[in-house]
Length: 246
Image: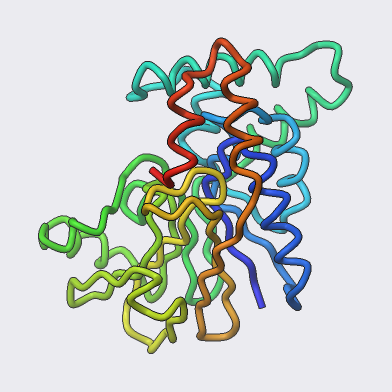
């Protein structure tokens, strides 16, 4: 069994809760689809935890912290610059190891029938694949052409399954379980640290042979919100949205 997490966004409380849930299952491998940092108040602690994952790929916020953020709104950009100052803390003996870890992350990982990306198979770092894209057949057909069989992705913070016949199923639609049937499938694993599907609980996926299970995990959302409110360089909205899963 594998655990697949994504979009932690410096939310230590959510990541800790997910890690505790993973420990309750017979998980052999943990895969992180990127965006360890950005938005939230605990980038260093989250990078330290993710360094223990078996596979971690690069997210666009991770890249933004490493280099210069491009295409970010003002709140996200301010958060990235603040994040960079935390990661650059010369007094922290782990700072260099964190930078090296982030800088060494690949943009995709392929293992058997499974492709792992942050955004999409076509643009692993930056392309969003939203549920409403099922009404954009040209876009979806081009993405599916690149996928051999199964692609796991994040980036939108909206969990769900896309089938090649252009249907989208939310975790609730599926009863939180989906069986891969050999047909091309895109699986958005949702977000650990900033869900945007109206459910504030952290979200991740367990993959057991050909069965996907969505896990929704409660955590101390208000604690994370209050931390964000206490950091002047972080927009208060980044904390408030956590309460609504938006």
